[in-house]
Amino acid sequence: MPKDKKMWDNILTVIMSLLCLLWIYPIVLILQNSLKIEGTFTTSTVFKLPTAETFAGLSNYIYGVTKMGFLSSLGYSLVITVSSVALILLCCSMTGWYLTRVNNKLSKFMNLLIVFSMVVPFQMVMFTLSKTADTLKLNTPWNICIIYLGFGAGLAVFMFTGFMKSVPIEIEEAAMIDGCNPIQIFFKIVFPILKPTMISTAILETMWVWNDYLLPTLVLDIKKYRTIPMAIQYFRGGYGRVELAPMMACIIIAIIPIIILYMTCQKYIIEGVVAGAVKG
Image 1 (cartoon, rainbow, N blue to C red):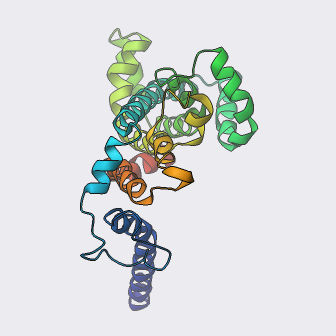
Image 2: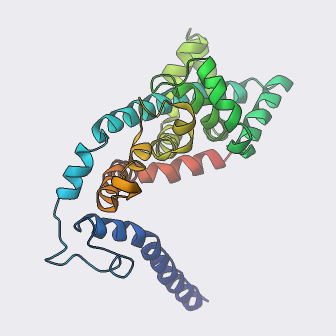
C-alpha cells in the first residue's frame, strides 16, 4: 500500500508539473514576443525565440511606457486598487465580525444576501451601473472604490465570517470586562487576529481589481482616465494596425507587481482559506 501511494504521488507530481508548464507557457510566449522588433513576427514566427535580426531589447518596453500615457494609467490603477482593497478589507472585516457575533434573524438574512451577491452575474447590472455611477459621481478613480466595495464584499465577508466562527468569543468578553468598547475590541483584539484572512483576501481582491477591464471601462471617462488594462487596448497604429510588441511589453509590466505580491504572500492564502474553513 505505501508503494502504491508513492507511485500515485509521483504520477500526480508529474501531471501537476505539466499543467504548471502549460499555464506558464502563454506568459513565456508574451515575454519572448515583447523582445522582438515590431512587425517582425507573424503567425508562423510567433512561437520562435528572438534572433539577432529580430531582437529589440528593451525598446518595446520604453516605447510602451512613453506611449498612450502608460505611466498615468499605472498611477490610476494604483489609486483604484489600493483604495478599493483597503475599503473592502476595513468594511468587510467589520461586517463579518458583526454577522458572526450578532446571531439574530436580521444578521442571518444579511449574511444570506451578501453570499447571494457572489452568484449574481455582472451582466445583469452593467447597463444600469453606468448611469448610477454618473448620477452619484462615482465615475472617477477616487470614487470608483465604492463600486468595487459592493462587488467585492461577497467573497470578503464570506471569508471573514468563516474565520470569525473559529475565534473564541471569550477573548472579546475578557477585553470587554477590562473596559474596552466595541470599537476598541475590534481594532485592538479582533483586527490583529484576522491577519491571515486579511492578507489572503487582500491578495485575491488585488488580483481582481488590478486586472479588471470591464468595470472601469463602463464607469470611468475613457478620455480622461485609463487604467492599465484599458491603456493596453489602445496600442494601435495607423489604419487600425495593432502594435503588438509594445502591447505585449506593457502586459509583462502590468503582471509583474501582481506576481511579486503573490509570490511574497502566497503562504497566507492557504492559511487564510484553511482558517476560515475550520470552525472551532
